Image (cartoon, rainbow, N blue to C red):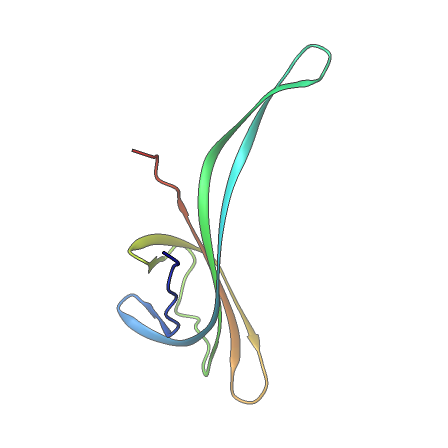
Length: 109
């Protein structure tokens, strides 16, 4: 069943920040550990440190300076730690904002 994305506004610390979400991008990443033989050839590659991240872009009429890196953003019931927040003054009265947050991927049961 495909995921359903409901676009709306971002809430932070129980207050609506007023960001009207234009897009949501989800990513999954991991790190690699490589084992090499004495000749320098890779014999084994293992993946570890699995993370998922989400980037939301949107428009807001005022700065969101009260939002902080390290804060928690909950999406689909998953708490993500806010990694970065960027704001660009756009046309007219709007700021274009981008919020990136990440969370560890839980170990399979």
